[in-house]
Structure formats: structure tokens, C-alpha cells
Length: 85
Image (cartoon, rainbow, N blue to C red; front, side, top):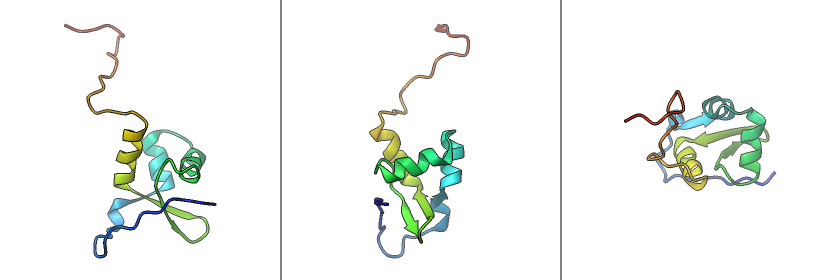
């Protein structure tokens, strides 16, 4: 399995900034297998620990969202489907 790995500068490792595949899947509301596919395809950066253990840096999620066209300024639809004045 080819994966992209990130290597932060020495001294900047912080376990709180590394998310498990399950945590990312729950956040994105997708199946964990989807996260593994994104990692394998190089769409989502991850750090591999051993043969089956991955961690996703928090900032990689922001990069992923940016690459997929998500923008913070994107307006979400109104609950009832109508524009509010």
C-alpha cells in the first residue's frame, strides 16, 4: 500500500493532533473503509505506524477539504429550503 506520509519538523509532534481513521470517519460521516481508500489514493495525508495503523494529522483534513472544493464561505441550504430575508 503506497501512502503519503507527512513529517512535521522535529519537536512538533503532538498526539492530540493525530486522529485515528475511525475518528476521521465519524467526523466525515463516512465508513472507515472510505478513509482508507482516500489514504491509499493519496487524497488524504496520513502517517503509517506499522502495517495496519494510520493516523491523520488534523491539518491534513483542512487540506483535503480545500482540495475537494470546500470553502468556509459556502452557504449551507436553509432548513426549510427557502431563502430567508
